[in-house]
Length: 149
Image (cartoon, rainbow, N blue to C red; front, top):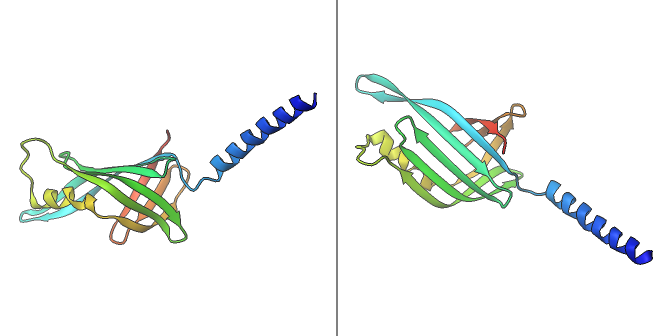
């Protein structure tokens, strides 16, 4: 009887410890999506360029992110992330340009497709509600809507 009680106690302790470690993990498993537009000056006035961004955080401490224009030009980046008292830091380890085959790029598209090579340190996180979050970078702000996985 005592051996069974000891085994049950050990299994229950391991289970509770695993749940506690999971709940207090400094990482998350969540996906965010942003749809917005930027206004680009042109010789004829201005042009609206639609942007789609997706940011996927994994429980392992890694992330994947991509930014695409309406013409499917942009970049994707992956790396590690961490939280600190200053905010969220994204540390890229790999980045690739996304350019459709045989697409002649404008200057804005060329610059945009190379933007992913930069890290983003100390992003401020403003949670509006359970489904909407704003990430504030030094020069940009992005409104993300949660996509639960």
